[in-house]
Image 1 (cartoon, one colour):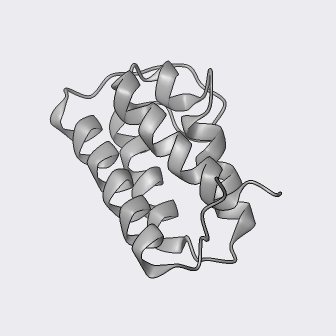
Image 2 (cartoon, rainbow, N blue to C red):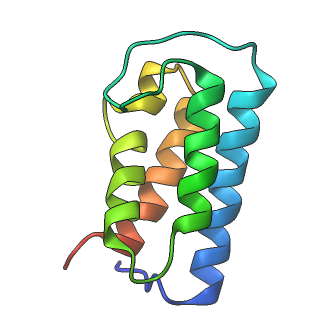
Length: 102
């Protein structure tokens, strides 16, 4: 099912899931990890990046959505940072359903 990214309810659901992800990373001790995000070397830096991208995300912003999709996608930075697998999958599915081209 394709969700409409411009639907305020979907946007709010995605925002809440992204904030859960940020809180999850910040609740853990800061850990260094290798990943494909330029300038991101710690879990707390990844949390800040996710928070910034979440605030930049709009219903028509495919570039920001694509970057978040890459973070939460298979073998993305979320996995590299050993983020919670279920939470990462939930965020990825929301982003994928709302922003993936038909």
